[in-house]
Every structure is written in structure tokens, then in C-alpha cells.
Length: 355
Image 1 (cartoon, helix red, strand yellow):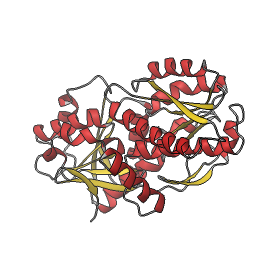
Image 2 (cartoon, rainbow, N blue to C red; image 1 turned 135 degrees about the horizontal axis):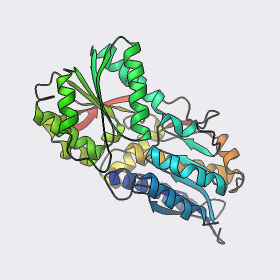
Image 3 (cartoon, rainbow, N blue to C red; image 1 turned 90 degrees about the vertical axis):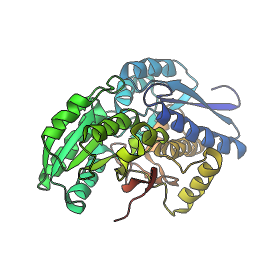
Image 4 (tube, rainbow, N blue to C red; image 1 turned 45 degrees about the horizontal axis):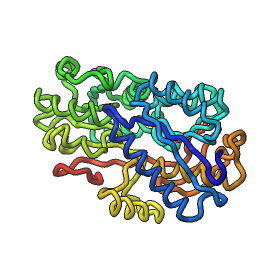
């Protein structure tokens, strides 16, 4: 740590098919850093964050983690976003004695692999998928679910949890098709198989880049054209480019199950929403809110006396209100007490879901 500064590192997909999520992550962190330093920094020291591009790929994440671990001035890591990237980096950070807090990696395995230096402020897949399936089956009355999921730790974990929940509720997963994120662009083969199974709901466990193309192609192939097949996915779809990539008609009425309620009336969330609307021209995304909060978790730990060597034990004691909700961790490093919320696409825009 240089005199007068304290340094964090942040890693996520700044380029590639998930670049929008990485850029939103960066915007949230930079906003937090600006506010922290304007208020006097951390114990009088200026907070600095170095950003690293992992392209959303495990192999790139491992290389990035090595670079971060080699910088002795770094006292903590923000990220990664993609679960597979986070899991590739975790052992490297552990060996280097670095704490890692992810705002967006939701795969259940992330906090259940025996590493005590990893935390996350997003609800894990075993918290997200059951809520989504319960709504789709019980509230929307769908019994024949098709799942299309990215071939990653996140996608596979979400699919397995969704399938288990749907079947426990008396529904049937009539098709489960996968694709390679960052590689596949044509999803006709998977969608044709799904069409043959005659589902009444199509659920995507993936990100906005491929998601836009998947829903566009599902609409053009006739799978979702008449509106009888419910369309749904997670908050990785609630990114600016998604609706344009898909075409608004193809995603009209789509349900998005999110772990961050950007429309909450909670004072901190409402204040943050006003800031992002003014500064970024849109309500806060999950990536902006979660990683803004992660930055402030590190601030609180450092002000309480944490060092690089003791950061994990200080972060484990976190108990504070953030812009994304209450921030407190269980024994595995998972956030406690947050609830899911549902958004939809209405008239070509993201909107709160009501029924």
C-alpha cells in the first residue's frame, strides 16, 4: 500500500459478450470510490481501485487473479461477475491471502467449495431458482417447462435447481437444452427440440448477450410468437442492450426474476436510484448496486481496523444497510435476508411486474 492510498482490485468482463455487466459493475464501483474519497477517504487515505478484464472466461479470470495476487498493495478483491470466473480465481486469491466479495456470482457452488475467503451480496441460485419456478408453476399455472441454459457453473446450477423445484411442484421439465456462452450464436437446433416438446413456458438461465438472440430466434421460429408460451429468465437479462438485441415484440411480457429491487422505497435504494438516473440516465442495475455495496463493505472493514491479512474476519462481521438491501453473511459467505422481485418487459421497456 503506497503512502496515502489504499487499494482494491476489481475483476469482471469489461469486453466480450457480457461486457455490459462488467461496465455496469465498474460504474457502480467508481461512483462509490468517488463518494468515499470526497468524504475524506478511508482513515484519511485515498481509495484506489484497479480494474481487470476477465472477459467472463475462467481461463482469463485465472490469469487476472495471478496479476492481482502479485500486487502486494491490494487488500481485497471485488468480483468476479461470472460464476465460472469466480471459481477459477478463488484458489489463487486464497493462496495469496486475499478476500474476495462478488456482487454477481450466483452459482451455489461458489460459497460451498470450502473456501472461507469468498463472500457474495447476490442471492445464490438455490435461493433464486425455486422462487422463479414457484411463481411460474403456482401463479402462472404453467406445467410444461422448457429450460435453455448456458454451459457454465452458473447455468448448470440454475437449471438443476429450477428442474428440481418445478418437479417438486408437480410440473414437468419437458426439455433442457444448453449452449456455449461467448461462442454460440445460432440456437435453432436447441429451440427446435424445445418446440417439439410443446412447452407452455420457456425459461433461460443465461446472460443478455445470448439471451437476446435466443428470444429473437424463438419468436421467429414460432415458439413464442402467439404469446401462449410464457417467457422468463434471471436478472442477467435486465441490461440495456437486451431488448434491442431480441426485438421488443420477441420479449414483450417476459418475466425477469431479480435479486435486487431497483424500485424499492427503502431510503438508501431510493437515493441511489436518483443518483444513477441523474448520472447514468437509468435506474440502477444489479451490477451497479451490488458492487457499489461491496465497495462500502470494504470501506467499513478497513475503518474498523481490517488489514489484508485480517480482512476476511472483518468482512464476516458485516451488518449494514446497503443500496441493494441488508448486508449480512451466513457461515458460508452467502448474503442473508434478501428477497427476489419480479420485473417484466412492457412496451419495449423494463417495468415492475403486477398481476
